[in-house]
Image 1 (cartoon, rainbow, N blue to C red):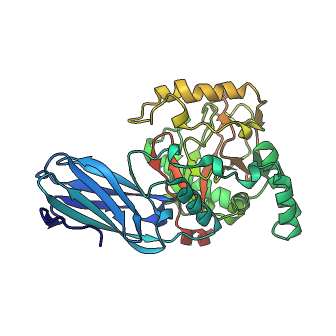
Image 2: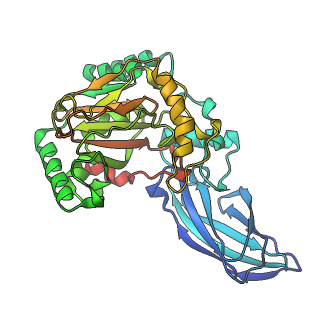
Amino acid sequence: MFWQRNRREKFVDAGHLAVISVGDPADFGGIVRVDVSISQDAVPNASLKAVASSCPESAADLGKAGPGQIISVGVHFHLLSNGEQTLRFTLEESDGSVSVADAKLNVANVGGLAAMTTDLLKSHGTPVFFTGPCDSQMYPYSAHTAWFDRPDASQHIDRLLEQGQINEEEAHHLREFVNSGFLMVEGLIDDALVDGVCGEIDDAIANGYQGYQFGSSQRIEHLHMHYPAIRKLWLDKRHRRYADLIFGADARPCQTLTYVFGSQQDAHQDTIHLTPFPAGYMCGTWIALQDVSPDSGELVVYPGSHRERRVRLAETDCPKVANGDWAQFGRSVCAEWADMLTHYEPFIYRPKKGTVLIWHENLLHAGSVRKDHTLERRSIVIHSFADGAIAYYDSTGLHGSAVRREALHEG
């Protein structure tokens, strides 16, 4: 039983409580949101509670709820058993009435990383249910270090090579990643695919996709959702192979960012924007769609900076970013990054068409100033989370999406 009836209760099935949306675990990394609505005629200051059918110990008091409220409840589905699960939400009102609403989740936690993540969450006492933003304080980051951040990373690569899991070229690139925080593979993507992608970008520009203004440093988001060649590139197994090797698990891309001209973005770590748990299980992939020229606003990376501490919002004086106001973020977090930069020499990246660069989630990187505004610098950036990791955005408190596993076979 999900609840115990009190003799004074007036049990109402649904009644003043309704589930209005349920996320699909197949579309997210470790967290889904369930939105529940409280009716206008509910009694003020009712108690909202939740429990999962497969996990009685998950029972949680989610706090007070008022008439007309919509409450977004986060669910850590690593802590639920595989298969269809029932989540029961209960609204207990001061007049003794109880309203109940159920949500169904289809859970499929698979692979060694998912099992490890589950164990870490359980040991830490991370809750199944939570309200409010996703935040790093829910996770035991000190409990696990990814192989490439450990002192014996070189021996790990040696073992993969000895076991025939990688070849000499892949071993070389993995050592690059460990030592510098990024790897570069020249000519990885063929001209035919790159040319098809550029043709689709031209079409997006001509049609004013997302209001793009030609000549600006504006990025174009999620073109892979509308154009087949860009989707093919997004899922291409050649660059995902390296991300898979880094993660020791399948890389699940979460978005595309397309640049026609240089971004001119200030130096930053990606960790705080695209945040995995455990640490290390997100990376960025930068694909050159043309030969990059000097003065075009080239990508700049800072070799070795991936070893700097990961900046997380809870450890600063900055609240979660809301309503597009990044002012305090700039004063707090960006100031920390600027201080880190003083310890590293920049590497200005001028690749040839089809070259792929993959960087560590914590590597400081930037877009340099566009000295010649006539020069394009076409590129696509893909960020990927490891299958089995939790994915969220620490800067905003949102939960993170990732491509469905079955789509990985399209690449």
